[in-house]
Length: 234
Image (cartoon, rainbow, N blue to C red; front, top):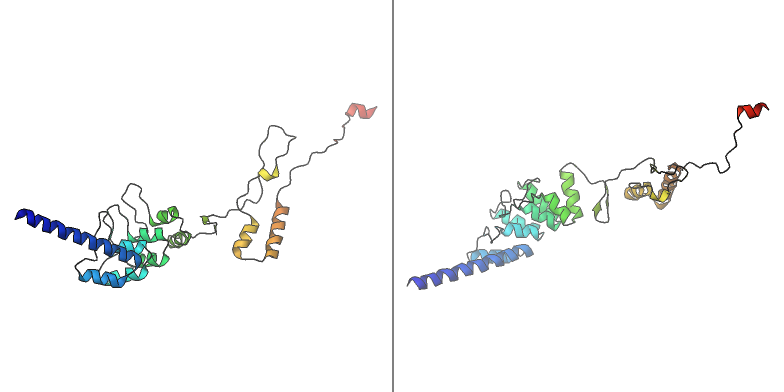
């Protein structure tokens, strides 16, 4: 009798796990109709998997903004809804690069500075950087009050111009440094391209910048022989 009861309980437990996994997959795809059907069959919207993730986390990871709104309407919270490693829906939305999902999470109480509990202490911004989600990075940095000044080739570049190229020290004073080795961070032409200027304006600015660079001192190839005062008197 007890053995039969245990078999029934294990079967029911496996059925609930299957329903939960199906619900999480539906949340990740944004299938609201299937979510409703699974809920009617007894699966909770707040059911957690082995990692402590709920349907809200899967919806955020899938970039499903409408699904997140639907779950909020059903009473599933965003704030305080964390996995066992401390990941919030905002972390998953940042990793997916979904700005709309991030806005929903922030509007519903998720902290933009929330850190994970897995020893890495990742913030949503760090997750977006690790996943190379440039739109998410720009959005989060703007929210944090540190806007991105320049985005190129999916990498962030803080523009900083050096008005004069500094010389490298050399043991041989007669040897002039190679100008190609003089390092400059950014360029006027890059900045003009970022501002959306025309090619003609870019060329003018590039030429002006080139003229403003410090030319290496040219040593006189035929130095004038200096006569001593005693020789001058003869």
